[in-house]
Amino acid sequence: MKFGTVAIIGRSNVGKSTLMNRLLGEKIAIVSEKPQTTRTRILGVAHVPGAQIAFLDTPGLHKPDHLLNRRMVRTTVETLDDADVLYVIMEAIHLPGPGDLAAIGHVKTALAAHPRPVILVINKVDLVNKLKLLPVIEAYARLFDWTEVVPVSAETGDNVDRLLAVTVAHLPEGEGVYGEDMITDQSMRTLAAEMIREKILQATEQEVPYSVAVEIEQFVEEGKLARIHAVILVERETQKGILIGKHGDRLKAISTQARLDMERLFRMKVFLEVWVKVRESWREDEQTLAELGY
Image (cartoon, rainbow, N blue to C red; front, side):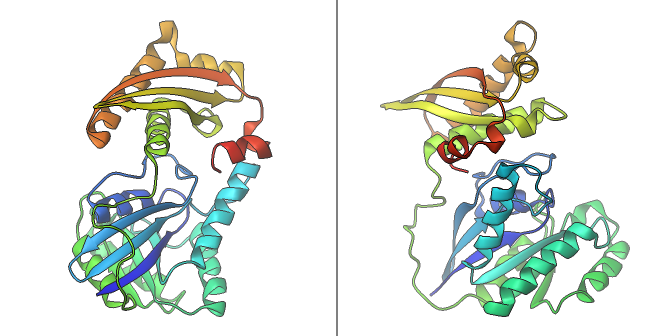
């Protein structure tokens, strides 16, 4: 039996959360086309023949402009120290850029103190002609001595089975530490908040998605029914108006879509009430960030 932790790192928007969801066969991390979607470290446990793998999805490495973002980057860097194997996620659709080089720099620093296998995962191969993939692989090979290089498509699942097999080969021996029915350490409250935030990311543009946080004020289970009261925090009155929409239509659509996702994941009926509140500069407020788990 093998057991180990795998940190999934890379710059923002390279598909880290999509990959983890694919590896687990279950959606536990929200995804969107917008960068900086993931704000905290998320544990996902894969149970495969002969092994248990604890994947650690992390916020994207980026240049932080708020206290929240600085904490996100710090979370990712600290996660490097906790893993037995590192996945460095890059995109097949372009050659290495400054953000990719910065991610590799963080990996080199972590390995100086604690050498480990590092797997280069080149994602989004479904978006490129296969003839254009080789120059991308060669460019990354010149930057670092990777333990393995595995091209995949997290979106379609192409070659993800090989990635799992390669990962198991590099795990240390040991018994799994999580129960066979456990796939994440996220509570239902946290999952509910993230599902609401995902729908906001999909429904809004410009600064609104980055100025939003979701707090679950009440989560009560009554048999096969969950009663959830949620508050969406924004930083300005104008953002509140955008979120609510004309006659409340946007907020209603966000709530309905989130509720349906909750019912699928929680396997119970959900009664969801959502309010929008303004809390100025919450992304720079230590107490608010602590309350929200950031």
